[in-house]
Image (cartoon, rainbow, N blue to C red; front, side):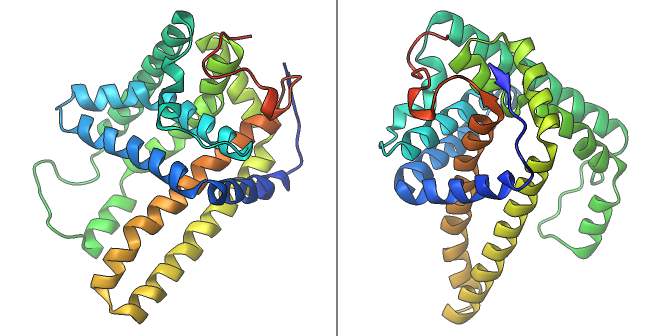
Length: 266
C-alpha cells in the first residue's frame, strides 16, 4: 500500500461523488445514518458509560458508513448489516477495531477534559431553556472551545482513514493512526477544499431550507423540513468520506475489488 498525492481540486470531486452516491441509494444511506444517530442517542441515556461506549464504537460506525458508500458506488444496495461491518470479520479485526475505538475514546476524553480546565462554555449548574445572543458570545469567547477545536484537528486526522486501514487492510491500530495522519497531511490541500466545499453545501442547504420554510408557512413548516434535510445532507457528507480514503491510498485494487468487509484482512 502506498500513499497517493492528489491535487487540491480532488476535494471538490469528493464532494460531488458523495452527493452522486447518495442519490443512487438515498433511502439506504440516510437510513443507515439515522440508525447510527439513533444508537448514539440511546446510548447517551446511560450516564457516563453510554457516552464512553458511543466514543468507542464511533470508528466502527464510520467504517460501516464508508462500507455502505462503497456498496452504493458499486451499484449495490447497502443492507442494514453493513453498518456493523467492523464486527462481521475475523476475531483479530474485531479486536483491532475495539482497540482503535478505545484509543479514540481516550483521545476525546483527554481533549474535553483539558478544554474544561481552561473554562467551561457556560457556568456550571446554569440551565438555559433558550439560546440567547449572550450565550453565543460566551460560547465563542470560551478558551476551552477554541482549544478543543484546535486540538481535535490532529485527532481527526489520525482517525480519518484509520478504521478502513484497520479493517480492510489489516493495519495495526497504532500504525493506522500514523498512516492516516500522514495521508491527511500529504493531501491537506484536497482535504481543505473538501471541507470548504461541504461548508458551502451546508450553507446553501440552510438558505434553501429557510426559504422553503418562509414560503410554506413559517416556523412550523421549517421544523418539518429541517430534520429530514439535515439527515440527507449529513448522509451525503458521510458518503463522500469513503472517496477520500479510496483516492489517498494505492491499494493495488479498484474499489470494487477491495477486500470484502466480511473477509480476512490482506
